[in-house]
Image (tube, rainbow, N blue to C red; front, side, top):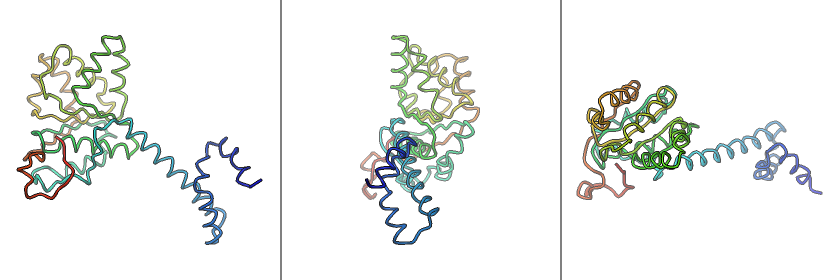
Length: 255
């Protein structure tokens, strides 16, 4: 019996069967480079750590449900020089998540709000945070469906549990029926417990009328804005071909 065969049940019992993926490679390296036993063991286990971290990252990215894979690195800041690059890079460090701060990305369509929001979410996943991305339309649709089938508490927990919740396109249309109350409840339950990144075409002062009730608007936005970073992204639309006639071909930055 090959010595590795004796290892397999032990590694499985220790939940280290992934070690087998690089065992032969590291064993040959140890022989060729005369590695000490501790050095050989360190490199073998480091392979397993990296494999697990990569698997966990893929799981976090999948659960985040991003519409597209967007990163800070592929955002073309030079296209709209007025976009506050330094502020966005600071937010991409994800330090605001540790403080349970919020972020509002404000600007017209096409300037890259969705790109930046998802890119920050991507960085948060890499930092080990649980993230969920959702459009405002889908958020309200899911919560309304939860009210209809008596699962609203469970649906609400889905939006309050992640360390970072990204809501895209808030205020693209007026809030209707019980949507203002649902949004208030999400903000209330996340207040000083988790962070939010919200994108909107509307300036912050235009968010208040969305709630259709002054007291409700004040209660919601006082909480959201208490620890918030407001980033105004102004400029021309990246999606408009006329604005990119002199630009190199690149992946489109969504609003």
